[in-house]
Length: 317
Ligand code: AN0
Ligand code: CP
Image (cartoon, rainbow, N blue to C red):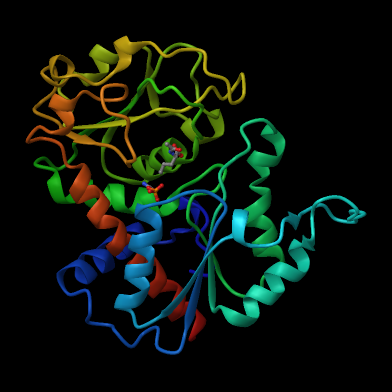
């Protein structure tokens, strides 16, 4: 594995998950794998889990970590080729990415979408500019269109908690007061398409995601129907994709409640977090015995450590 900016970059999912499980059972077994290597964690947006779990994963491998909030601590970056830089942008990505590559052996970046410029967001222009101009591997810490480290933690969690060979997994849209990205659902969908699961997506009419991502996954607008016999309920809000970045519905009827969970086969409740209580999901579900969101967050460390291990191994070849 050279770069990891998409679920598509996983060449052998079973092997990656086996590695993550081995790491979880003995996180310090490989504590010199990253010796004298530096991981740069660059954030254009806030983070709790991704920042801390990736930093911890790096430490478990003996790597150094440099973390920077590029938005308010660095120079404002220009991404346009051939730009006349007479405005507020002080540094071009061409120099910035090459300079960061002098200090870091792996660069990891969080860059949310604008949710206004669909074309640029779809091009994943910030992360891909780093891939283009950096001379070291690049990891996505959630880009405009994907959050692949989250998806690895998600499938790891499903594997740990499943009680049948092929569980029914439901991704349900849920209401939210702010316009949110498509990255988490996109990567989750791609991951479910690779996994041995019976997968159903449910959302209000008009909330269709990118058809290039959903492909032939089952989609229904009937949430209650979708919940029937489910083993896992994965809740997530996303803003409109076709009417790009808009909020067309805040329909509280889509919130995950104990009544809806009662339709399932005592499903486990999942969410990537952060989650808005009593908007996305009611307290009773989130605080209930079938909520596995904390285990899911814990698995972020082992997902990140498995990915870092694979990249370090590739680099030392
Ligand atoms: C972000 C999102 O929905 O993509 C990050 C989730 C990991 N969530 C919020 O901005 C609330
Ligand atoms: N799930 C997730 O990526 O959380 P953070 O935004 O806190 O990193």
